[in-house]
Length: 185
Length: 181
Image 1: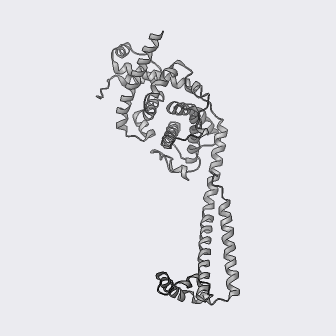
Image 2: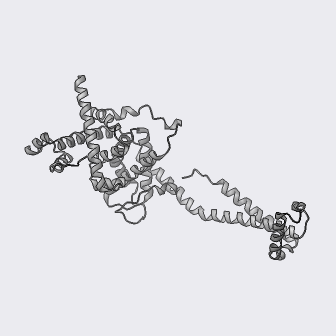
Image 3: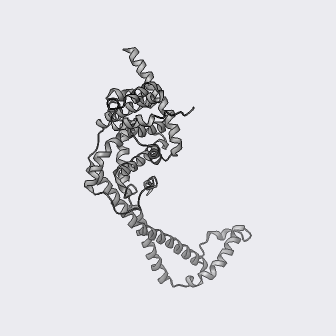
């Protein structure tokens, strides 16, 4: 299948076997993982409608992979890896002007509900999608450099430098916004 | 850009991750974080991201897990069926090729028997295509000798049967839904 080509091969998994998750186990895993995954996709892409689609696709591919993963943490990491690949594929695709590509009207409100989200939005928009991914995985999800390397497919050594640069940039933007906001008040 | 990390950054990260910051943190680490620009940066970015995560998670519109599970099962079944159908497709392609070969043989045999409907007869003997045709014909002649002497009563039903098989193969191939997943 074409879509199976995009499936990442996790480093620490056993050979494909029977479907490891039954419906109940999946329900529990979904309840715990779906929201963080959606938040990641929505924040990095800036498009909640796209996040809806990619999240479902990520779970479908996760289930189709039929892998036996070493615990829920590894399973979640694998799920994030699938989602990261899906995002990358989406960005590589040529931009279409079709009606389906127009974002839902409710989209921006979801991402700017709180003050923090409102502050972070412009700062995130100012950095590259790759930097948004790295920053979200490191500071929102709390993944280590090694884990981020596994999820994104980047070299572990380069993640430190990339994160350092993008963190500094976002911090400067946040400070600038905070100063601007205090001046307005 | 010089990458100078603070040696206490790890401690700050750990306290943040465990939710101890700022109320359950050692006083010296707290005062260090006020004076160190790296740690201040880390705190600012980490807190902004964590708050944004909480707000986004709270607003996440999720489809029911049953729907995702059902779609995964459906996709799995579709794929299993496609895997099962793959040999049939091979047979269909093979049949189609066989039919084309049989049709070519029939055509060649009929020409060899001198039906006289070669439009190429108009060519002059010295025409390069005519020469090529004569050469091909002589090569085929040996191979087709056996086939060419088949009685027409046997040849035509055989070819009709092969053509029917091919038609069924093409029909089945066209019936496949390309959007099935």
